[in-house]
Length: 111
Image (cartoon, rainbow, N blue to C red; front, top):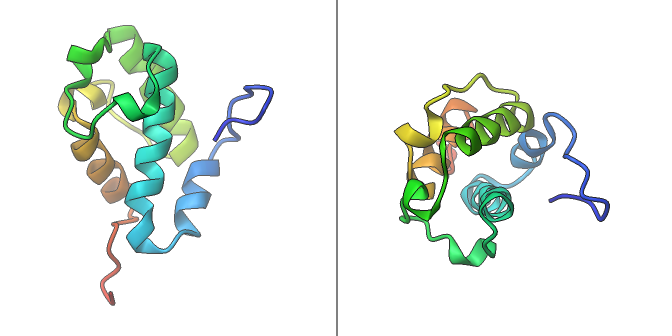
């Protein structure tokens, strides 16, 4: 998701990508983006972060949680709680929550 110079994504970019992605693929796309970000912060390969792993047990601390929240507020154009990762400490829960508050549920009503 980051370009070759490691610049931060443009505000709202992830939101726009999710909006243009078929509903059934949104969860996978957001999961990939979250794993990339957390992998960078934790010094892990994204594939090492399971959907049901407790992020705090993997090493996410309070400062990382706030930085993560700030980045995804920008990328998804949302206002998020400072306790986001403490309220949703597993990617499975976090992805579902973010898609719901962005009004981009993974399954469209007509599917």
